[in-house]
Image (cartoon, rainbow, N blue to C red; front, side, top):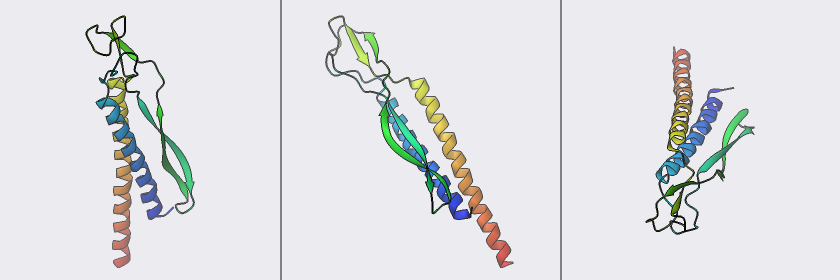
Amino acid sequence: MDFNSSLKIAATGMHAQTARMRVIAENIANADSAATEPGAEPYRRRVPTFSAMLDQDVGGRVVKVGQLAYDMSDFTSRYEPGHPAADEAGYVQYPNVNTLIETMDMREAQRTYEANLNVVTVTRQMLGRTLDILRG
C-alpha cells in the first residue's frame, strides 16, 4: 500500500465520522422537541449506517456512508396536562433520544476522527522524510 492509498482510506474514515457527528448533533438538538399535536409523533432518533467497500484504485477497503436509519424504540411520555400536544390522559410524547448515549456516541466519533487524522499526519510526515532522503 502506498502513501496515497493510506491518505484516501483515512479520508473516507474522516468523512464517515463527520457524517456521524452531524446526525448525532441533530439528535441532540431535537432531544426535547415534543409532538406538535395530540397523537402526533415527535422527532425520531436517527442512526447513520456505514459499509466497508473494496476500492480497486486504493487497493483496500474504504468506508462508505449509507442511508440514515430510524431508531424504532419507544418514545418517552411525560405527564404535562397543560401542554398543547397532551393526549386525553395528559401525557405528551417526547423523542426517543437519550442525550447521554448521544454524547458518548459523539465522543467515540470524535476519537475515531482524530485517529484517522493522525494517520493522515503520520503519512504526510513519512512522505516528507522520504522526499528528504531522495534529495540528500
